[in-house]
Image: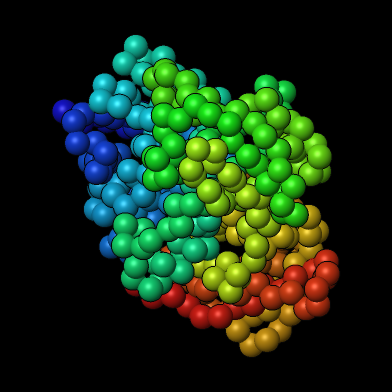
Amino acid sequence: MENVPASSPTKPHFFQPLLPGFQSHLNIPMAFFSRYIDGTTNESNAVVKLRSNASDINWQVMIEGRRLTQGWQKFATSHDLRVGDIVVFRHDGDLLFHVTCLGPSCCEIQYDDDVIQISSAETDSDSDSKKNENTTEGGTSSDHSCFITRVTASNLNKDILYLPRDFLRSNGLMNRQCEIILLNEDGKPWTLFMTHEKSRFDRVYIRSGWRSFCLANGKRANSVLTFKLVQTATTPVLQLCSSLRPTSQNRFLTLTLTPYNLKNDKLCLPVTFVKANGIENAEKITLVDRYGIKRTTSLELEDGYGRMRLGKEWREFCEVSEVKTGESFKLELIKEGKDTATPLLKFCSKVFP
């Protein structure tokens, strides 16, 4: 029996109990889909974003008809969802959903603020590129020897860091309890302990030295770090790498102009695109339209998740570039000079289904 949407006209909800087989896909109730989603996109296979209180990650999930498919399994696994749990979806507009995870007792599942972590260096902009190349997440390979994590006030205070489950499983570390060595970017070692905690989440974390490692290397709360497994053996070794180094792939971003953007007069850049290109501290950005005309506008923090909001000039930029509601367009980030404080965001082309 499908659940009907909640009555809130501004932020409607729906909920679904998780039944056997939920890992492969999740159905959106027909009444909710018809009222709030159908007709909002002209793509047969659109992408929605899922967000939860467990992390600041925007999870990219394919929606095929009423089904959440590619990307849903990764979200479910990372949140340790199980048969009998209940998920509540709140539609925040612009195909963005906030998901609350409840246990069988209908109480919200409590996550430590650093348990949900990115398990590979894939970003929102990478997903956009894959989408444009008609390549799905399930058809691509990722480097399972690497993971990205975030330093938080909580894990510094507790002196522990939880490791991503898919990273652990892929490298045979899920049940290990042993010493582990962290190397900084210069190769200097720190010896910590890796502990297996048997619980609902079956978690593994490193302790007794995480805080010292971060302080010695100038890593504060909200720093994003990339680690690579360089040795398993008796004592695993993790090497700290430069976090989210910009690549040619990271420079490109695809956005869709939606009624939500126009109604709320805002257009935002995804947090992973912002961090991957090191523009989280930029206060201005120059928009270059399809005719090469430049408009410098403000770049402001939109929310606590790290999204950046473009100033009012984005409307004129879209109008001149002939981008209409419902259309997607590709942008390229260009930095003129090594340390420029004002990067360029250049219009490349429209993107058609």
